[in-house]
Amino acid sequence: MPNNRMFFWTLTIKIIFLSLTTVGILGNFSVFHYYLVCYGHCKLKTADLIHVHLMASNSLIILSKGVPHTMAAFGLKQFLNNFGCRLILYIERVGRSVSIGTTCLLSVFRAITISQKESCCKDQKVKAAKYIGCTLSLLWVSYMLIHFIFFVNPLIKRYSNNVTRKQDFGYCSTARRDGINDSLYAALVVCPEICLSLLMARSSGSMIVVLYRHTQRVQHIRSTHGSSRTYPESKATQNILVLVSTFLAFYTVSAILQGCVALLSNPSWLLVNITHLSSLCFPCFGPFVLINHYSMVSRLSLVLMRNINSVILK
Image 1 (cartoon, rainbow, N blue to C red):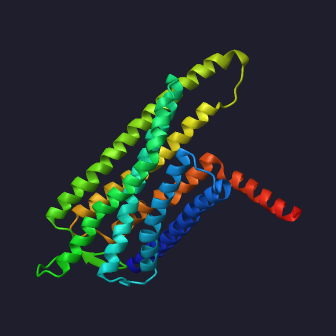
Image 2 (image 1 turned 120 degrees about the vertical axis):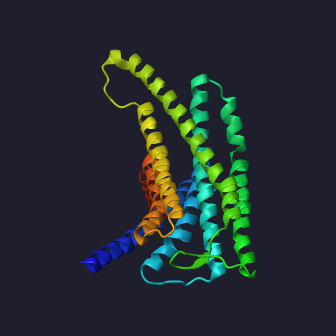
Image 3 (image 1 turned 180 degrees about the vertical axis):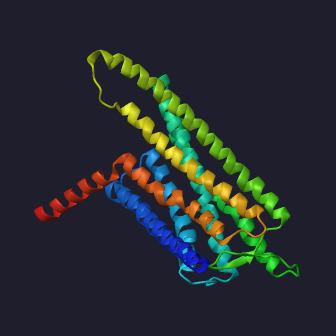
């Protein structure tokens, strides 16, 4: 009976890893294809530029975490050496940090956009849009430099005489961080991520309040006409709620599970795999929230039909 139960959970983990990785790759590259086909050489809007960087960071997470864990789940164990293992972890952590930063940036930018519409002040949006590109570049560069510290340090320790504990990821194993590195990681990575998450929740909350008040005013004005249709303001509020709640829910669960694994001296195999799966949820499902939010499928289909018709006419 225990063997049957173990076989069931092993098979389930394999299927979920494979499904999440496949869905995530298709979703993120579909968004990239959408922007490539629909915009071409045109300049992207500010929000669309943030979306592209968000999908790029999500793709890094899926390729560096989803693909290796899927291969390990299907039996391909320890196929990376120490350098390859550190490099994969480096790419994954950079992608995760940039994903949090760009999502926060998107939330703050939308809050500024809605606030300026409410206050009839256009200078805020113009100034915000002007510095978005620089902010995105700064996010990538800063997190690549920060995580490079933790990428280099274990490689240096490898050639020292100190005996360090190994951390097994299934597809590879590497030295664990010591107390100093844990403190440094908390100060440079964990604390900023918590601050970004709080800022994102704060800006999204204020944005929802503004939209709710605006919706109440519009409904009061139009109530005399007896109209019962859904207004664009209400739909925008629902879309923002879905985007923000999806991100915060998945990353909160992932952070809690990672904390449990870190605190336990010998975490179970199932808990470790569930933790890895939870960290893949937003990078995999986020693109589909974005596709539904902007009706990308219908727009992409329209562009493809136009291209086909132009080829036929030629």
